Length: 121
Image (cartoon, rainbow, N blue to C red; front, top):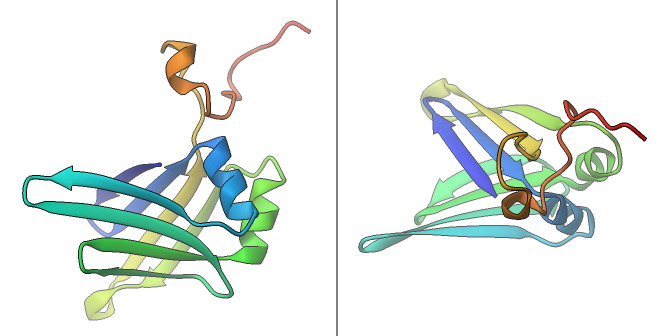
């Protein structure tokens, strides 16, 4: 899982195995070890969609029905606007992570094929 945070937006990029785990009803977790602390990120299938940040953990609950549709189609992303603190809106984007066209393929073996790659089949 890759995470990008900019102001009031959070973007999650998930590999194909991670999307499949969510679709199977299992959580996807990641940890970043800082000196003296750990940032934890967890995405779980749920009945409703919500996001929280507490105790050094970002917890994103995603609607199971949305996950199922996203995982089994060519839909690339799920975009959400959720209530943040102080009346502000938090933009959340969850995307399938695609392979880069210029990197070593072995480094990105679990990522989705890039749709900009042309195949001569």
